[in-house]
Length: 383
Ligand SMILES: *Cc1c(COP(=O)(O)O)cnc(C)c1O
Image 1: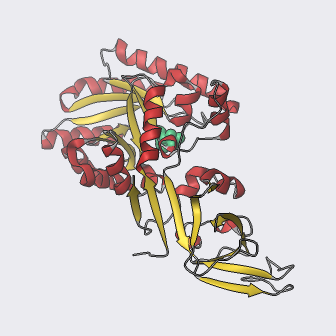
Image 2: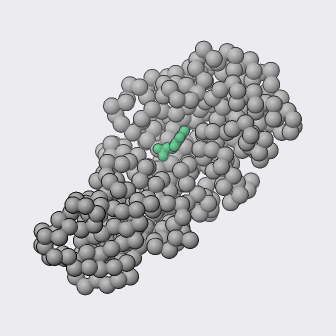
Image 3: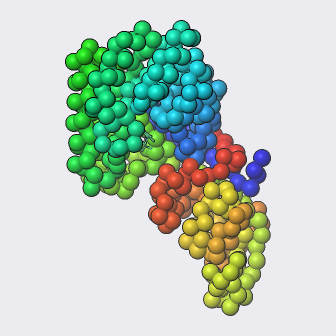
């Protein structure tokens, strides 16, 4: 087990974020917690347990490996929906455990029907519509044949939902593209209904769409990033603030990541720090070595840029981030000793390092940064 650092998940923050989301959406709208990518790096099993304690009973995952972790953690107390990959070998497990899943091609539809027939359990499907993202989903011209399969095999299927996904709702620049997608999705829904196939629910919104295009909320919203206390983009946040009198961020960061100082060194002016020549000490400096590197998910692109908090002060990463270590300038932070706390993401006193400031620096999205945090770091939940 990795002991160089710890990740803490705040239940209070999650409760706050869920309350905000529930207040924002219609009471009848189902809140599906999207937990792909190891729950955006938060730790899948730990996170879904905590989210379920906070009242979440619907989870969306990318693939069956993740579905199994959620199922093993919470069994049939919750609904699990696979947004992405279900391979043929996994179909039997999926159908037998009442896992819901997106269907976006006929192979999968036929496989689902075959397995449902042989195990005598109906497959719970969400038909995904291609509306313009051009990734997965049935095209308009495929719909008539899909409809005829659904009608013929209706006895082996539950048409749980009709769904689609938008291509970049977090940016106003994509407004027309998203608007077109919304219209195409509605056409597909009307077509299904006109053929007496009424899905139990329809859904399309991720965090950004749910905030920027309220009409996309429909019967269920698939919320990933915002439940963790982060906005999909600065634009979505600003757009939200513009609609409100109080200019306070209603979300709270769930994750914090801490380590400890491993070594302290004094470096003379004129010396280079770390590998190569990327950082030259221009004065006499004191350096703390922190046992975290890119193998733990602290991106190498944060070399000479990342910020951490030591002794209540923001300190800069100097030199390159190595595989297992990095060096931090502590010349001006006062008395510090080995084993003192280092905050990689989180707060100490009034000083904070947010994921956003951290990822702006490295030009990564919050999403990517979080999901890269190594799975081997222990996750603890705290009140
Ligand atoms: C990841 C994902 C979401 C959630 O996206 P956020 O921006 O994190 O809210 C919703 N729907 C689908 C299909 C996804 O893949």
